[in-house]
Image (cartoon, rainbow, N blue to C red):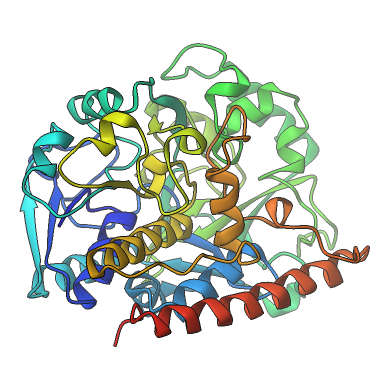
Length: 451
């Protein structure tokens, strides 16, 4: 079978299928055909944040990681071995992580890694038992055109933004302080915090709003996925909006004053050696010179050396509710007339988030493995976090579809309702864990769990 795209979803699908004894041809166009945001030719390269989000068992993100681990995900296992300190989140050294995945793929006897651009889906189907499209948000124009021929619809698009990274030794440690949110300041923490006074914040917002942007237009809300809004667009919605988002000071105490700052930027370690830090929540569309000028107004970053500037790029995805079934298979007359079934995974399928992409690759791998073996894939319980996301993304009644993270808001309501938020999340987690246990047993009975 053939998988197009060596990102998180494609790499996961390739390793999952190969570990189940399926011969895989994994096609990745980099480095021969680079993209505006990738820096290497390695597989599973993380181009935005290096955080895979929360590991807390009563959070949707934490439950998704438990789901991946329980189903034997090779990428989540690699992420844990490449982890860097991030409080209650799982963050990785992105270089070590992508190299580990590349090395494993290249060493697997059942995976053939091919470096070339795929331009036509129908041609692939003539020489494969199945095709998985996991080409991601920067799918090439030629492949996008081929996909649109199959769907009969225009692909949807929005803009995705990545945050800058600064060198650790260029941060003024006299101004920033070490503390994880809501934890005792004396105990330190995994984040550096750059505190603003009111006057510093107002000056920063003034310059942020006046700064030159790469794409010089005011974005309409439909153009931007909410979780990746550039910081300047958030400020454009209201001067105090950043103080209730990525610059919120809640749960922090500035040791210099003993009080909560007016606003605060958190910086998260970017690599295993702690040589660089990510500006958390500072996705941006500013030009590189403006990023250097404006972000050096942040207290503690006056002399910041940028290891990577923030970038903004196109994100292409299909209208999943109307084009995919709950196995991730493309269901259009033209697609079903092809010589092999076509599946779509990862961000191209309309999931949003690193672990969501990994889980999407795993889900499609299970569907392909079941199809090739002539067995039925057990239905994924809607009470698991990915089951809830899949139900949302595959529901034809979902209107104006936009990419979605796993979250408790799309899960089936509890009966009876639980009013207390912490208890409600705990109940969601308990129900999801029980449903996952039953699903794993069903997969095992069908011979679909890796041995």
